[in-house]
Image (cartoon, rainbow, N blue to C red; front, top):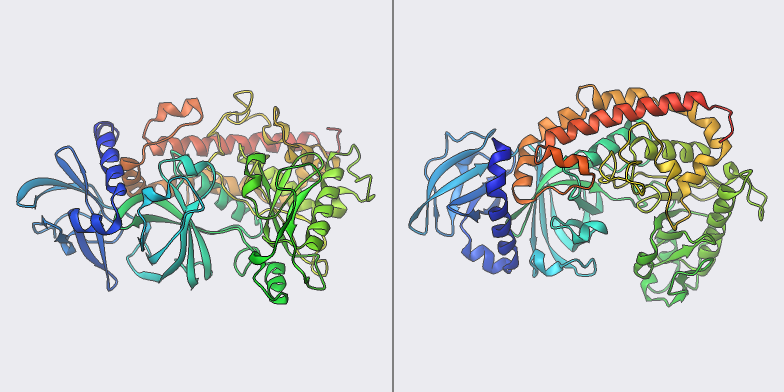
Length: 549
């Protein structure tokens, strides 16, 4: 019934919602029929969404319809008997006229309310440079207050999602906030899952990473997001990949560098190549370095067209662009040190015997072998389309703590688990074939393909598969139970259903069209795919220990 209802309701609701977002926040609040209610002593207001002969209210978790008050011309009847666990329809009066109000509740999702000071969502366009300030309140799924604070910055998040209708966002609070039980920090992300019709892929990948005991996995919590009184959809409130307590817990070289210089690092002159040139990069004319510049560094694989937007970066001799996330403003000495180490890693990765011919160091003398093997295995297991392209991180602590480069943490898996076909149209949607380790038709050096070719990695994969508990972890996700994909989907069913009323599904892999708006079938297909993928890799790894690639 829900699927049939969506087909006629989706387009008018989406169009109406887009029109609401064009209005300035103040004008919108003054004109749109809305409801006001209390959440743990805080008053919140949500605007109704209008379509043909129908108004819709996207209600947060734990809000009792009987506690709602009409605002801006909305007169409500007694809603005390309206259920909180299913859709309902009531008669209301709006500006003296009878109307029908559809109430869609939520369950098991927190709520994030953001009020911007100046801008509406449409004014951000597709630019990450546009920013606003504002206020933010966060409540858990039971309606209990979690945190409240001023936003020093609100901006768009991501790259491919910039052109999606449903945007992702960066939140930066003026002071550290502990949101929904996660470690306190100023910086957070709201992940839209705009390219995932199941709303389960990021959950599946991050939960799998935790079960495999991968370090520094970002914690994420499901939330419904309301911006300037408007419902935006179901999101994941996420920790960001950054150096800090509860994040990537290594030495903060950026902070130490900042403390040693008279001016903010942003004020120093940028040096190096403004265009991507092999063997070159860009950094800053920072006068004073800490005595030890061996760490910590946080780095990410990047694409050529994104190089101009990077603050500090290095283009390897094979053309791989590596963006420096921290320190974001590299001194020349820091740049020369870490770029040299990264180049040595690449040289070893692409040599026949796994040795850098310039430094004489083997791959495992430069890189933590288990981190590289486990991260490759993980990317292959979830069949991540972006594994050799972007959202791939590396970190290095100071030599006194750990002299090796580590692969990770994991991040961004909306295009994993058979959500997008590969270059030949099938390798990333096929459960019983390699994808990440054989990816073809790419201009980039394809790092994970080279990692897989290293004999020292291939020798480690069979035992690491067992030691990491891959089968047990996948079974927890696919065979029912508290952490299973099916349990996640059912727990968030009402929140996801609300989301797809205004955010139409988007498909990459052709076969997923058959599922339509049935996110439960999407989720089941992911569960089936992951289990088959685990069985395939288990058999593969058992068969080639100590054999040539």
